[in-house]
Image (cartoon, rainbow, N blue to C red):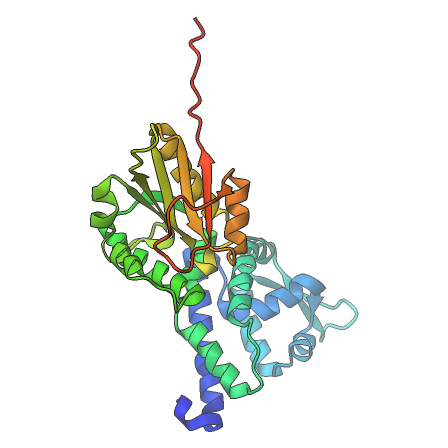
Length: 327
């Protein structure tokens, strides 16, 4: 429809609306929220105001009286609303949330919080042309599953070792990250490692972990990290490195990066490694704060990096805590 410009504006907005309602309803279904996505404006309004008549609801939401009447009738049948009659005027009645409705709105609150974060990311753009802005919004909303992104933030995330079913997500997540931050500095080594982590990392003594949300079909992968031992004949110790640490943008802010890094640090510590190193770029401020917080210290590069985008080398000394025998 985009090729027809403003002549399909209504159709495009309706397509967006229909898609969003479907996605929100899927989230509600997954989270056992007993309301329809179309009920939200009325439920939220009554949650804030206490009680209103159908006419007052229609005026506040700028909707037609028949549309509100039809919706509220359904909501009364579903026990979300209850009607009260004015004792002074039997012809006047008002609507308010029932106990069941109040409970449902409390249950939906965490869902709304995470949904707001995702939608704010999707709409955080500026454009001097409304139609160009609409095209961008369509690409954000229609180009991926809003439901999956919200559920990634709502449901438990596990850190597990990479399995073959995760290979495509491992590649896609990392390539998307590289294309976003360093589109002109993607090295051939990146493509080789990402295309075959089993051969390039695991079979060489390393480990790859992924942060996943378990689903009925394919695991939803929201983060990755890899660890590899380093050969260092000049030093009588075991050294390792961490790399490919990232979290999908929509799942950030939930502590997943810390959990991934802690997994790698614990593995290296328990494996008797004395030093853990990493390479990063100074422009990645959030990553640098995470590494500083976890005891990594910037040092001179011991060897030239394989990646042109890298300008920071860091190390962390690992001390295996020995448990004393109480006897």
